[in-house]
Length: 182
Image (cartoon, rainbow, N blue to C red; front, side):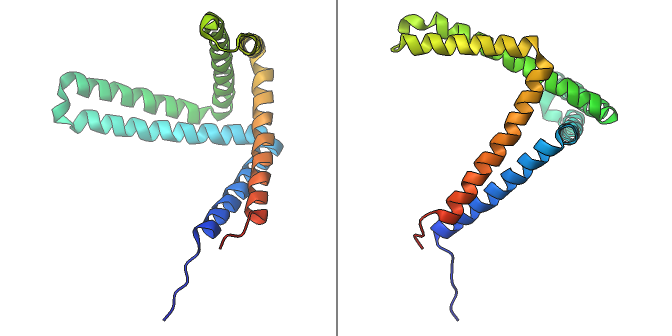
């Protein structure tokens, strides 16, 4: 009885093809149904928070080795996680909007800080011109996101969709037209 096994190159191309098609599918879903996709993603995060909360609660109640502080901390974390997940589930649309705005403002703040850190480390930079350019772009982009978080969220969500479609298509191309080293 003979068995044939797929070569590593064929397995790699199959994985690229599957990942590429999945990325295209997710990108198209985000592009054509952005609000529903954001709400679905928020639902997944809310579910994870509830499950995590239950696990923390169970650990806080049952783990005698943690001591009083560890057990109380786990119970409090469990209540916070589960409570946040339940609240998010009861108001998915509002939770999705809040999550998007929060993440965009946080990203904007991080970009501003990153830009200033780049400027503060200018003395140690090998390429001062590029460091200044990076810092200015980072600071301007960060303040743009902070000053207009809704538009920033819409743009970044759209950019994610287009990026997933483009990278998915490239992976499909790599899988189909890649060298056959079987």
